[in-house]
Image (cartoon, rainbow, N blue to C red; front, side):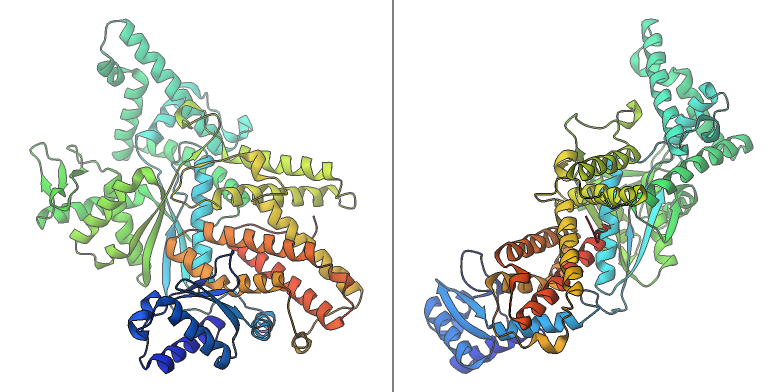
Length: 595
């Protein structure tokens, strides 16, 4: 039985004994930092049972717990809040159980399955800063659920068809002169992205030329030759024209090779890939079935719609008049296919920016109207955009912050700062590169994950890589510092074991605070999972690192003459390092042994 459960049981016994009534629910929470204690019982709801004022109720329960529980050392009452100080013996026992549990922080399988979708790029451009936040969020949510005992399926839908793809194809045919990734020396996704930008430049120039000739802007947008070519390519693709499909496969193949390299460096993975070119037809069939059942309706032009006005939304087109599908059509097909592929999943988590919130409200409602009970198990992990000091990103204009470039810049800056600190003289160049990659990407991931996903955020590369402050490198440095302490202890022959831990009679305040944090780790994972917010884990890791550093600064470990206390503090340090490593790993961040 863990401490939280023991404490709740003791409080329930106290209430039943003192007031002759059982209690159904207790409001137990961490104590505010300004007061002494670890747990606080909110006593206002208990006054109905006690028939006393909140302060009298709190005092009576506190006195009972001190006298009878064996858990509470002392208490203080602030209005109707009962702040409980746990005995050092209990904290030492709690720590001992954590120390011996090599799987601490990893729950056994609960038999439940979950699917998490993330990344889901278009195949007309390389991944950018926004994709980094998307991938890191989706990957971290999946890893957090895995730690809690779920079987998690990581997937993505690749948007590999549509007019945006044909724009790159049209520009390549017009301007490419047979250029390939091999002939250009460019990553395939960057090469295709180059032609997406070229399309936009030429399209704007052609529109201007037509407007100068007296054509209206609306008509010029339709008549621009390069746009006509893109539309023609889309029609040919849908008609399965051999040459068009071959070019589409070739250029998408270039992109996939580029994506794979980027994903590898990001440190994210996928169990299964879904392609829009495969799923849009499934969605189309489902929509036509919906028309037959009267769920959807056809307009005079032949387009198919769903009327959601009675649900507080609007009418939504599902098939165009020419029979071609829209994004919603594809998403309907994809959702249904996934539940067929993985029938045991509890639900699907879609990691997609908050500009698509309305889209997912409509999608989930349509699935429900189609009779799929699992529609209620779908969740949109909506996240805010990432801003930069230079303003909003526009991929078609080539002003996007490229993911590869940003990761390289972060690694380069990490190497520069590490060399300036002069702490790597004993490392070979390869080791320096490896460490720089670890610090640079750790800084990037942590900065993007420490903010609640729902919030829009400003990414500051310089702030993110600092060794001091609310950063990934601060946590990485704390881990490396602890590992150095443990190595030094080992060289001195100080090796703690579980039997010796109970020989310590008392703890320092900083030790109690850190043990409380570690004991709360699983609660934090559950909170992160419930809110789909890796920020909870990121901020837990930061608080733990900060708490350990306060301990380290106030207590000179190796000046301790009491061998039991010395061994306890080495064990204490080992556990902190282990939990830091586990929590950062859930975020996809590695921590170094030396730094």
